[in-house]
View 1 (cartoon, one colour):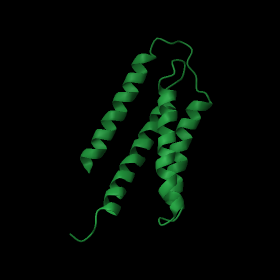
View 2 (cartoon, rainbow, N blue to C red):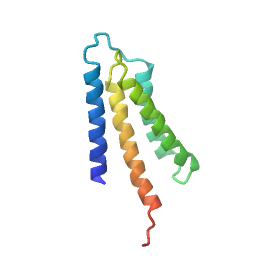
View 3 (cartoon, one colour):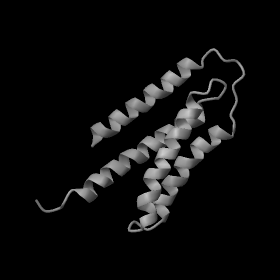
View 4 (cartoon, rainbow, N blue to C red):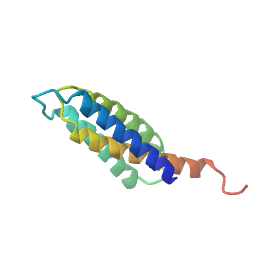
Length: 115
């Protein structure tokens, strides 16, 4: 399981480096609503996962759909040329952390306890 987190961390780091390299020549960069939204969506999803009871169907459907929306927003934000990347990078690492937790819990839920 540690290898999964390491692979997700490396992928996230490479995406942030690629986005930084692509937009390094732009002079007037700023944070827009898209930057704040790309950070807020993963944070809200993580909070909702811990607030809503585990057996709820809302958690089962909200988390994968919210993660997909977060990845789309982060991808758009990272590769805009006149956008600062820090908030999107933090949102990406939170989304990858959430994805790793989902994969681990998904493995334990799907895998039967008895052989």
